[in-house]
Image (cartoon, rainbow, N blue to C red):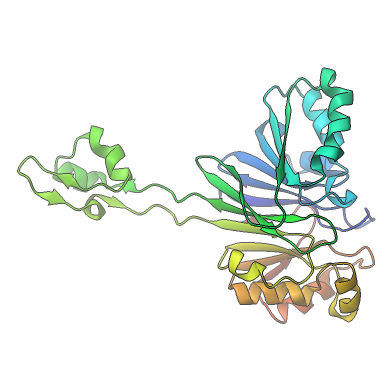
Length: 304
C-alpha cells in the first residue's frame, strides 16, 4: 500500500447537496494525516473512510468561506471528546483567528488540548509547516477573500545502503549514517570508495498541490510545475465562464489549462457548483485539454 494518498471527504461548493458534501480532504503521508479544509460533514466522512482521528497532525484552511470551514468547530469539539491532549496546529489566511477565537474561548475548559492558530500571508508563497517527512508551502490564490492553496512535498528519501558492497569494502556499520548523508568512504589503505558505489538512491519525492478556490491564475503555473498530482477547482463549465470570472472561480477548461502548462502528472478537479448533479460533463471538458484528469467524488482515494 502507498504511504501517500489523498482522501476526498467533500468536493462540492457553496452548500451541501444530495450529491456532494462541501470541500474537505485528508492527505495521508507516512502514517500521518493532514486535513485541508473542513466543510460541513467532514468528520462524518472522516469516519466513513475509516481514518484515525488520533493520527491527525495539522489542519490547513484555504479561506474563510463557510463551505471550507464550517465543519471545523464540530471536528475540534469531537477531538476533545475523543481524548486528544496534544496541541492541534491550524493554518490559514487572515481572518482565521477571528473565526476560531470565540469558539476557543467558549470551549477551552472542555477541549482538553491547545489549539494553535497560524496566520499565513496570502500574497506570497511561504513555508507553513515542516517536519522530517514533509514540507507544506502556501500557494497564493485569486479569490474574493484572502485565500491560499497548499503545496505538499515529501522530503527526498535518504539513500539506501547496498549491504553487499559495504561488506566487500568492509564498511563498519557505524559509518552507515554518513553514507546515507552522501559521504564517500575511505578504506584503511586510503582508497576512496565513492558513495554511489555503496548506496543507491531512495524513491523520488512526491508532491501534491491543492488549489481551491481561485479564478484562472497563470502565476500558479511555475509554482506547481511538474507536481505529481494537482487538485484544481472546476466550479463551472466553460459555458459559464463569465460567471466564473465574476465570482473568482475557474471552469474545468481553465483547470486543465493550468495542469497542461504546468506539466503535472495528474489533474484532479472538484468544487463543483451545486447546479451540476453530474460531474461527467466537467470531467469531459477538462480531459479534452488534459487527458490525465480525474473527477473528485466523496470516498475517492487517490494514490501518488
